[in-house]
Image 1 (spheres, rainbow, N blue to C red):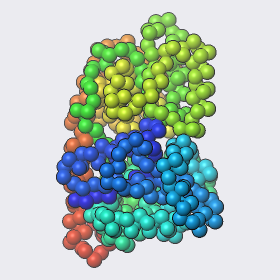
Image 2 (cartoon, rainbow, N blue to C red):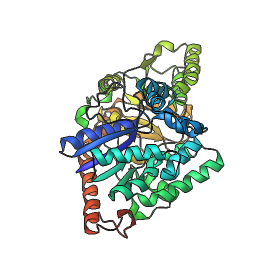
Image 3 (cartoon, one colour):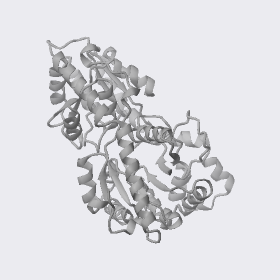
Image 4 (cartoon, rainbow, N blue to C red):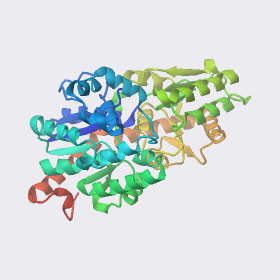
Length: 447
């Protein structure tokens, strides 16, 4: 099977769960003898990684932004377009990327969702022409719903199934100003008819996006995220240092400020182990610097600067060191998430998780048995749960064993990708039985 995976690049500057997911999927699918091509848009997937397939970056971030904001750039000479899509230009864009706030980027988001009717027709045709010349895929996989503006043209050109992963698109759309927000959800609903199947990572997000996109049951399916447990060192939490960890982009939205406040509060209590440290990793973007500076000032005032370790390496090897040195993980995302791949990475490493009862967190923690949730996402509530768990070695051990077992059995990437491939094959068989009918318009998709 020849699969085109179209995914936004981010340059590798911060922890991106979607990017980790896509990379792991590609490597395993290739080992299963499937041809899968990861096509980056906006930016390179990782500036340091070798791109052996020499796949170009489409919809270069600076070029697309300037053409959207300043129409005269749409008639720019080839040399300027080449300059705007150079490695140095991408590095500049990478420093500005990573925002979960769409304010100021609403027109570009809408234009991208308009596809061939938007202001990026030239970039769209470049992508289609390249796929036609070099790939001719059997199926196209879009990494998130903000890319489904590509789907109508893909269907028109190749008449093949298009599938789309769903992962926290609402965070972006709902941060827009009201008028843009309404138009964006309307466009997402309109373009959804060109997608054969949406894959959501939790029951929570299936229900949420089915309502937001006005989808029929047959158009959306839950497929959990997964990892390979053998890639991670398993050490039960009761055998590791009594430290707490955070792994995600170091931002306010991801709850780092809540965890910092909880950590400070914990150290004010007389019966708390004063040797406990907080390990933080995941990188940050330019817009997070002010927030991080404020957090570090809080630590300095509390006299805890030496108790917080900012771990810069969040490659796989860096993550192994990180998880080897913590007994608990907490990423208290302010609004919750559709999943949170870092939960599985922690559980595979024998590290229980402590998460707010928001989004999919209760569902994933119940399914794994590898952690706990707490009501009301406040620092004092998080501090209480962290202290109770750190002082209960027997429970830590039990949660570690349960979490690792769940990753091995329920969230194992090998099992999940086998189910995913079966889904793809069914879509292709269904298409083969109706070759003249666009697959997105069929009355029934069977699984």
